[in-house]
Length: 237
Image (tube, rainbow, N blue to C red):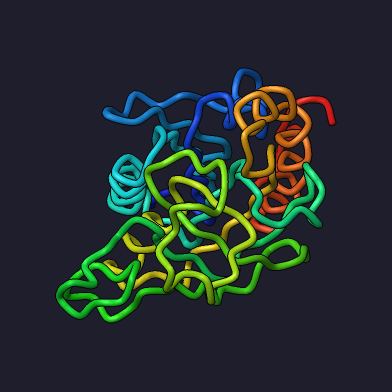
């Protein structure tokens, strides 16, 4: 009888730069030839963790999440990455877990849906209710296919959402898991690389290595909690 390798955790990461900064892919992970997304594996014949690099944006994130669900059947999906911060009280590099996320650019309100609600789904906010692997503060996050440099342009209905962070992937990951009946398997850890203002593009480049080093510490802890042993996950802290 063939025994399938268990996958306690699959990480969905948007950018190669993020994945390389959070995980030491070159030395402790093996790249698998699984088109159309780069996938890396760490573990043994019985237990493994995988990292899938989705590419930027909600469409890529949804497709990569479905790919990892179909191929690896993970017990837990973890989305990690850097974000823009709408909350100037949160320091650059401070890692937070996302408790609630929503789309900021899905607008079918003309047909009676709420802002962020995809037609024929019942939710417009996605609650990440899974117990987090690492005890960090919680935040609320908005996702969409735009690099946000300010609060201007958000739909007025989103004023009450009181988002702390914005990204371009997480809510699509959440929606994909919801459609698969597995939203309770999702957790997400984010840290700001920049504040959402006119300086955001330059600040993103400057702060990226520092922000990723903080996420690497959390990734190590998640791997340990999930029973994946081996070398340290990320680059120098």
